[in-house]
Image (cartoon, rainbow, N blue to C red):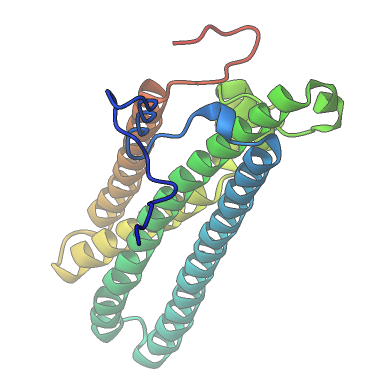
Length: 248
């Protein structure tokens, strides 16, 4: 009795066809990805960016609220100590211990908020690119989109709902990081002034030193923000610029 092997593939040279070459690992031809699957993948990424952006904003608001609450409690505590001690040396020592702790919390909050804002911009760029992909699939839906569909400066500011007739300076003044920077500068000025008085430096000179510290802290913050924005703009390469821009 003999057994025949069925379905065995023949080798080249024995009358059979040569087997098709296997695709390279990790590569899939674009023709093999159906359109509904592509849309589902983009929609999944879109929702992921939305959730990530929401978490970043929630953390920013929580950190800012914690800092403002701590600052309020510190002011109330210093007021009580000041009334009990006549705003003398005990008050200054208490303030010089408490205010640096609050300042540390404010600086940490400002740094974290800058990171959250950078994260927010990255999410906006990603969502704008996904909207551009939606429009490549269905161009007739463009009239229904109110957010940006390009990843250039105009598209980013459109998604961020920046008022078109408002200057950049006014937008910076109204931003939460600016509020934190001003409060941190006030804390620095208070620490410098109280420290000068505690070291028996003239009151006028201590106040002048505090004012200089306030201005210097704001200038330093403005320099760091400008450097961060300049670096972000220099490294960004739009993949879907608007009609008035050119591709890199």
